[in-house]
Image (cartoon, rainbow, N blue to C red):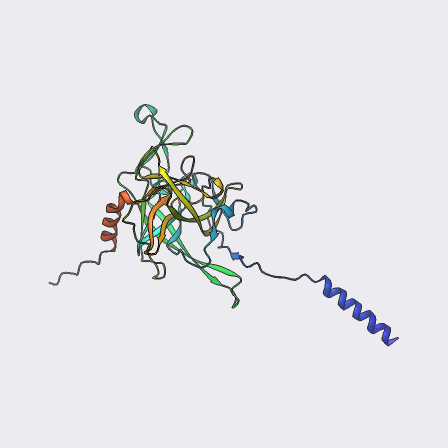
Length: 317
């Protein structure tokens, strides 16, 4: 009888062990940031959420930068009473208190009389947001094994300064007719942490067929949802676009016209180091393009000198 009872207990325990599911965290699992208090919405109706239900296109946005190789890439959000004027974009740290993004990220399009402009829509300095938030991300391992990571995110407030020559004309089909200086700076109230080092400006123009790295927040066009993670993808420069303004067409992996990282840094990587060569404008118009920073380097350097200059000493009486 005792042998029988012992045998039955053994079967129960063994079967229970077999049914217990094995729990293993995926190596790429990343803890998402808490949902913001207010909805953050792009002009193109992209919504920032914690966990997109459908992530089929996020792989095209590139790999999550869990190694913190590209800390100069940040998330840029704009708040507005009219949520159509709010935006979710990316940006590049170029100074301790300066973040560069696309002008159309912080200056929404507005309707103008067709007779005066030849197009129904314009993006310029008239309707720009006054304030913007910059969010930095730093990935850290959750465990000693390092198979699971989480993201530490800090938000910083700043004022918006668009380029003086910003002007983008858009036709009724929402295609770019002409573009000039599609850039804007965000001047932060306080300097960023030292680990978020600024990326230097390039002194050499981009060449056709040159390979560049583009960074930005992942966006799934099927669900029109941002995942909020810093992602990188490698692209190839093709040729200048006819509308000018430093816009260059790029060719993307797989031929897919991914549009989820406007305002994000475009980097040249070489044995000499990493440098900023452009700002993504893939949310604007049809096709994939960037705005080269080479033609606007004098303005950028002047603002860097002005913003980061040490304060003048107080005059002694």
